Image (cartoon, rainbow, N blue to C red; front, side):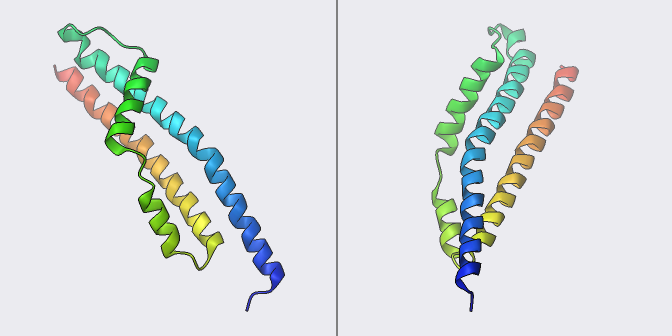
Length: 127
């Protein structure tokens, strides 16, 4: 059975992890959306400008990317809440798992962006 001190330590760790997650999450969302905006602006320049479309800046592409992300993906919090409810036993471990999942998601977004940019570059060279 856990002592009061162990419970306080676990609760403090959980709060610290959640605080970090809620501070880092908006920053990461902005950074990944900027990354997607950069990719969109490059792809736009490669594929749409040659057929007569006006070029767009990274910030305009950022806005387009943010709008698309909002309307296509939405703000899906149901899965996050479901995971937290399923793993209610050890909250500190859950918070750490959420941070690891978040980091892996960020890495996947960055690598996917690089893959899309590389693949599009090959197509751009062929056309």
